[in-house]
Image (cartoon, rainbow, N blue to C red; front, side, top):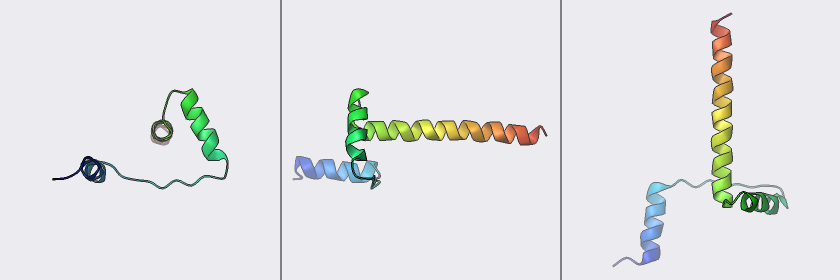
Amino acid sequence: MASKSEYRNGWIAEKLDRINLTVPKGKKDAIKAHAEAQGESVNGFINRAIDEAMERDNAVSAVSEGQREGE
């Protein structure tokens, strides 16, 4: 019978991708403090920041594409 941690590790391997992120010394503490001030985990904050940047970039790309079509 699988242990609780074996089940959890299997679920993680099946459902999630991992990204190894490196930052300059000291920035990890600043990120953690900012995330906590927002009521988030570091992982949650990083995921939100990525999602917001991708949405913003996609909106800018859509506007740029529309401007090229209207030229």
